[in-house]
Structures are given as C-alpha cells and as structure tokens.
Image 1 (tube, rainbow, N blue to C red):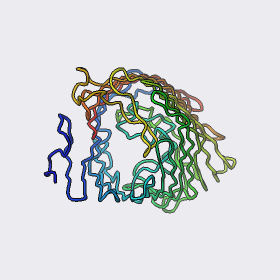
Image 2: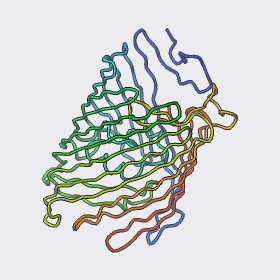
Image 3: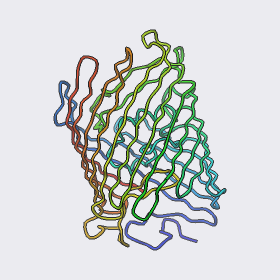
Image 4: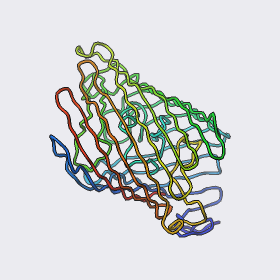
Length: 390
C-alpha cells in the first residue's frame, strides 16, 4: 500500500501525489490558470487589458475497485469577483467494459473542442461557436445523466440534461444531447476523426414570472476581465432551442487539423422573430508539435490531449520543453430576422510551451471584428496564459 502524499509509481520530478488504499485510488485534480493581457488596439470602444485567475478548479477524483469513479471538484474562479461554484460532482459506473454510465454535475459529451479538457485546448479559449452552442444544453457544470460507449475507433454518448450547478436561473431547464464519433482511418502516422453532435433544450429556462428564454453570447475568444460580450443576442423568448453540427480532425505525424461547424435553431414566440431563428458558425485549427510527442486521441472523450515529452523526461524535455505552434480562424453569425447579435470573425496565432508535464505557458495573438446591425468593433489582442494542470 502506498503512503499518504507519496507518489505510488516510479518517482519523477513532476509526479503528483496519489493516495492508494486497498481497492481505492484517490488522485488530486487541478486546473489553475492565470490570464494576463488584453486588447492593444480596439475601436470604437476601448476594451482594455487586465489579469485574472480565469479558472481555479481544484478537487479530487476517486476510483473504487475499478467499478466506480467519483469526481468532486470546486471552481474558485474566475477571480477576482467570479461566482464560485461546483465544477464537477459526479458518479460513474465503469465496471462494464467499453461502457460508462454517469450521473451528477459534469460535462456531457458534445463537440470536439468542448470535450477537450480546458487545460488541453490549443488556444487560451475555445472558439466562440463551441462556447455558444454547448451552453444551450451541454457544457461544464451541467446537471445530467449520460450513457456512453467507446473504443479505439468510436465514441457514442447520449445525455439527458437540466440546468447548471450553482448561481443561476436555469435549474428548470430540460434538454438532451448526443454525440457520435468514428475513426475511419487510424494508423501509426495518420488518424482521421469524423463526428456529429446535437443538443436540444425542449424546455428552456424560465426566470420566475417570465417566459422561457435562451441567450447566445461570448467574449472575443480572449477575456482579460475587461471586455463586454459584443457577440450577444440578448434574451430570446423561446419554446425550444438546439444546435446540430459536424466535427472533423486529421492528425498526421506532428500536424493536427481540427474543425467544427454548427447550425443553431431557436423556435421563438417573439412577435419580431417570425417563428424560427437560425444562426451558424464554424472554426478551423492547425497545430504543429515542434518538439515532443504530438497530441494523442483519447477514446473516453473522443478528443485530443496536450502534447507530451517523447522520451523518459518530465522536466525540460530535450533540454527546452515541449513546443507547439498553432493558427485558427473562426466565424459566428448571430444575425437572424430582427435579431442582431453580431457577426464575429477572428484570426489567431499561438505558441504553447510545456517546460514540465504539469506547467504550460501560452502566448496568443488575435485580430478580429464583430459587426452589429449598424456598427463594427475592430480589435487586436495579445494574451498570455500561465497554467498548472494535473
């Protein structure tokens, strides 16, 4: 039996202490991020610069007799002034090979970028279309039950969802989500990923004394805590709403391409909506691992992990750490009928560096524009990310 607070496996400089008892393994969890940066140029509205603890998620995950997994993680951010809340409080049965059954507060399977752990995403923030869509009936901190099956070349999940945990007015929401992914090609040097995701809120959240409604919004893909959500529809009174889309990725040696496209449907009863509102968006990423082992596909999440060292070193791989460069273009159009939520286009470049297994540093540049019905916001931003994740 391992001793409390001592690594149980072969020790290395970045080993994370694990508690092992007879039949029980307890592993600490942390994703702590400091974002520093902002918008060097923006017009006509100054967006500003700043620093914040974007994510401060800490807790434990436990495995009992290889049959049951338990997650208990609290989100202390964003800091300062962010609402603290339960990030994960779930129980999963994993005793049946290739199947997982989960209930509680967790992230249901929906979309490729959404299912990458936040610390594994290629850029500081996900593309706006990923954030906008998943927040309808999936996303983090979601109260849900889910059944999923997965293997080396497939992933299938079906979820029934409610609102999010903690502060908010969406506890009475009811919806569902599904995701189907397959790998038609998987060889030593080439992997092709194809998938389809969908979600539907058949009973949108309703604030006391008001009609059910949904709201679609996001910051301009970096957020120093000083910027408004220029991409914003406001509250859309709706009978139901959902999103459906496709995802694709090609990993060839050290190069990874991934992209997604979604249509969003809102069945609105607002007089100005004309029945159904339709929005859409997409993104495409290119990432290249300069040094280290490239991103690996994980069947449980049907998404890609961070690059790792390609040899038995965990500090300063090859003497200077693991390096990755990346580029992204994204577009979201939230104009439909009388709703003018903005049409956003952003191009971004990033450099990621892992000096050790659990530490990441990112420098990202983006140039973008958000066009409303009568005006446009143009901006250039630089953001740095300092992260500890295990």
